[in-house]
Amino acid sequence: MRFYIENFLQKNQTERKKKSVLEYEYKTQIYESTMINKLFNKVLILTVIPLFALFLLTACSDDNGAIVDPDPEPDTITDVVSDDDRFSILVQVVTDLGLEDVYSPG
Image 1 (spheres, rainbow, N blue to C red):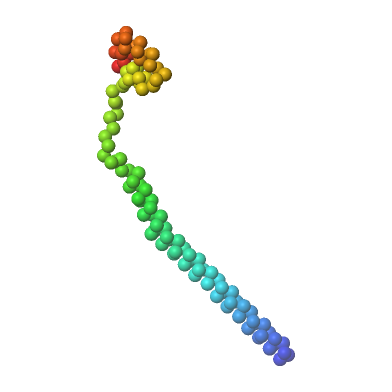
Image 2 (image 1 turned 90 degrees about the horizontal axis):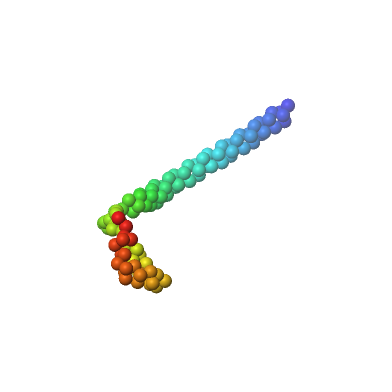
């Protein structure tokens, strides 16, 4: 009978040790995952958010103060084609006939 009691106590003690080891491993995993989350949050706060803010500030800049005329004066047909040598005969005919103003927009 004493053997059974000692055996029972030994098994019980072994199970407690296993249980305490498992609890320790579980707590260690929770602690490590918490530390990883804290590290991720620090990286997020210290790098990603400032970079995003910088992106927003540069995207909303005023383009160096350049003023763009929303409705520039349109060019005449002779102004458009005079730069291209393929249309030299057309430019010559239009200017000889005095039709520059006839084909101007507006």
